[in-house]
Length: 348
Picture (cartoon, rainbow, N blue to C red):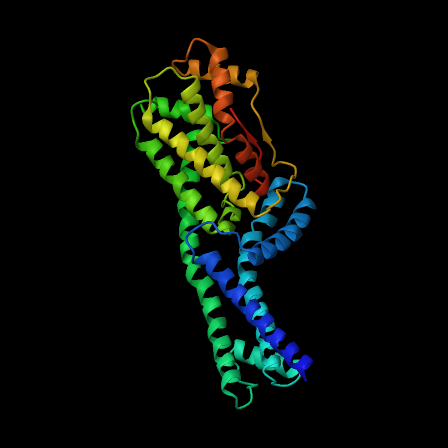
């Protein structure tokens, strides 16, 4: 019957499209070296995020919430190949039904037998159906292998990120402060004429942008210590650069300027990536970023003077310059801080 034939053609087309979308989603998520937003991946990660956010809100301390959220990224990552396999199974079930392999129950068994390479249920002696069965088995293995092969790369990027975060804590104090960081740079003679430290932070920002937009889930892997965060570290370095460029009266430091520029570009590109993926930040206690006031700026300047760091005479002009520089990354830091549930960040 024409209608029956049309229904089978539509089922085959729908199944093929679902299989193709799943395969392309996996490639765009882990193979394509650019910041692509994948609908299937975003849907899964957001769904799991809502569940973990609800559990985190039941905890009364930041440490307890941090322990809950530390599981979010690993659980979401492990669930991803499971979703891929489910979608492949559904797509091939529709394809086998369209090829006349029996009712939906038998087609479902054929699909899952092929997907998990069980061999318990095979299609009839039909070339196209057998070809579909072999292709499903191959794609299932390919998708699982794809994620497993990328895990070492992801954890290497995580380790490099956290090494800089930990080293920054040693230099900026605990809780970290851009003023303390500038004092350390002054004591080591790196405030104006040494580009080694600023070059390291510049390279860190550049790698941060590349890894956290090409593999977005990496942004949600939390630091081993609850008081640390890559967003907090980025804010401290950028604030130190803004203070250096606005208030400190030393010869021009091109390395510091380039580091500040690289940091602003990287943080804003990460922000736009997650905003474009419609990732809604969660506002919970102890993850609020306080904006510095003019009194905070004066207190910071006074602390820098006590450390022997020369400052510009016009403090009001320095304050306005600092505000303008901070406006280049303030919104991105606020968004990413709430999105990743960082500990409280107090500028200056």
